[in-house]
Image: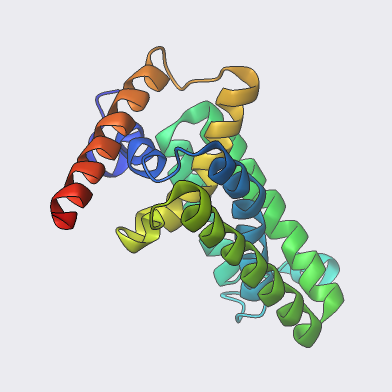
Length: 196
């Protein structure tokens, strides 16, 4: 709870949550964020190996940029919250392994086509979610790095809270809800002033 800056989960969640308050938009993100992460890993499979590894030949797992990308996400999520972060880290690793196996079996040309189709479909769905339901531009237009890094963890936390009542610590969701409401009000006030 005393964390600030980069590891301030409340601040991150409130920022992202203020752009995702409409239930339909939240549902769209729950459906599309992890496929975006997965398909990005399919694309990263074709980056060069960083070092030679014995399991590369047998399983097709290449220690490349995709693995670094996965480990950075996983470590960041664990540092934000040990329980949900560990689950997110596990999901990231599962995505890396399965994306690698899929990319290896599909081959370069087909894997790229499939991954790009998934990216296009999922990003389009999310932009529709923001434009039609949220009626607010996506968070990535205000903070690209935070939005891209937090998106998978945000939707996981949202699902854990919705289905299991999980919160990283007592009072987390009440505090975040208040911060989200304040951020949305601030955004609406700015929008009204611009419209005058």
